[in-house]
Length: 421
Ligand SMILES: Cc1cc2nc3c(=O)[nH]c(=O)nc-3n(C[C@H](O)[C@H](O)[C@H](O)COP(=O)(O)OP(=O)(O)OC[C@H]3O[C@@H](n4cnc5c(N)ncnc54)[C@H](O)[C@@H]3O)c2cc1C
Image (cartoon, rainbow, N blue to C red; front, side, top):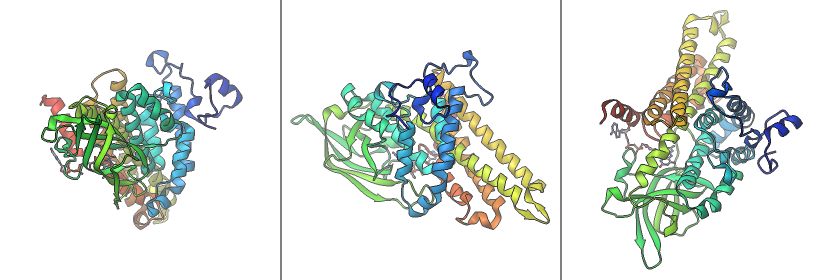
């Protein structure tokens, strides 16, 4: 199963021999994912996107969810699940086909993120950060860099990618970063010094996209670099102990005279921050979709629990208060998903979707918080224990309001879009 087996992916041929899609390479790329073909089904997904959704949902339910509680408790990333993602071709989700990836459109990217988060948010987060890294290499890297990194990152999921923007004193405003990358003309290298904070895949990562000032005193000199984790002076800090997302490995990374060849500079000096913001617009849609996945998981848990749990001689699902809670939760999930789909539609139509991406992230992450909160409430005391998934979903949901731009920053972007400043 997987990428290696499907050397010449032909959807029709594969379908004839085995009707069950088992990796992204199964899907026929000649299918035009367009409204014009009439291929969109009731869910507004094309047949291909719907089939991918089902494939990833099955993986999430069978391979991710069962181990999520244990991984959370052990604060240990499930590497076997990562291998499973690679087998499915998901680690090459945003890698161009020429380098062995799937080159997913925005809707497919969102659908995959939603379904993985339905199973285990920590795994979905790790993949979305890996995808940020592969996207940067694909968009900004030289041909030699693409060939050096992308095929392996797509096929094996290793080296795992990292995206190093945040710093201890520069989060919502990365322009305040203080990491520097000074050019050394004698060796034709850049020398990085400084500290990054909150880096997902920090311990398990093999290659980092790093943002640093090429001129220490100049905020407009932020530049993007590719830094292998085995470069001398690349130091991984302690793993954070977190409220939720505990299986995800989040660390500081410091650079102590870390030298990279000048060819590892991915953007012109000073063009790094705008590149980061562009990458993060797509990333935000992924996080919004993950929030929808967490909310959907909590809704499903609450719905089945309400049908089974009896009080006052009847299932609590018969009580109107509980029914109304479920109705409100379901509406929140649907509305959030529609905002995600709209942000994807705009991207696919070539429109400026920055505001739509922020609306989706803002609304979906709030939905994740309120839906998981109500799911715990519907479980009563049991929901407050680790015996039920809703306890973890509630803790995990919070991060979607924080990373890749807090709720407050999303509102700032939305208002700026409305008011023009
Ligand atoms: C688990 C986890 C994983 C992460 N992974 C990564 C990663 O892989 N790579 C990476 O680069 N970063 C990562 N981050 C960092 C994340 O993106 C930042 O935490 C986030 O951008 C917020 O920055 P901060 O924590 O410094 O908060 P601050 O910027 O200090 O904000 C504190 C509070 O002030 C509010 N605030 C700040 N400025 C404004 C404003 N102008 N208007 C209104 N309110 C404002 C914020 O909304 C927030 O409520 C991760 C964080 C976590 C917790």
